[in-house]
Image (cartoon, rainbow, N blue to C red):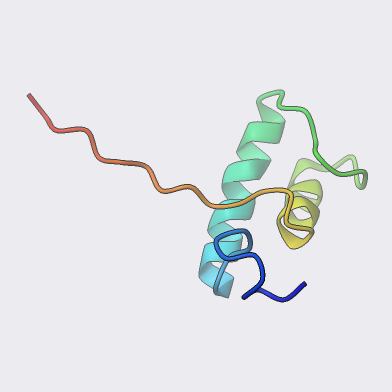
Amino acid sequence: MSQTDRPGTRPRNSFEFVTVASARARQLLGGCVPKVEGSPKPARRAVEEVRHGAISRTDRQEQPVE
């Protein structure tokens, strides 16, 4: 599948790819269950998850300060 077939699933550029993978690596270090088989190292597994499309970017909505 190309990136146009699954919009929003894979990062659009290398900066976004690294940002998503690093956030996922932190989740894996915190105890989240891996979504793909692979390396026991959290950073490498996070990269594989993003590469395979198992992880996608989500935009957080800013909460207004009261």
